[in-house]
Image (tube, rainbow, N blue to C red; front, side):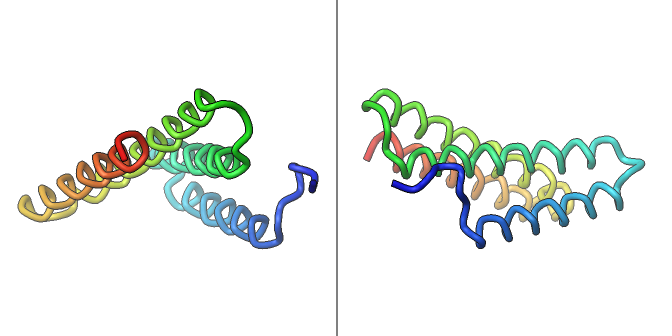
Length: 118
């Protein structure tokens, strides 16, 4: 069995791109505390989501542990969806903003159904 701490080159490249993109976003929005906080929170959620998905793929532990990991994955995915909808919707006309929020809610509900009810 391979060491769990080893990551593929693609994973390292992905995290490198995320770090570079995030550093650039923080640099460009340095005076805006809300934007910097958004970038850092989204990055933290993405990293946690990646770690939870990796743990879920390993399937270690009993059914309660798998259920907890599923809950964490769903919560993080819903958080990210809501965060991005909250940034995009205000830029849109009211009808399109409602559509953005509706798609966000549908995505969260669909994820809940897929993870816990199906």
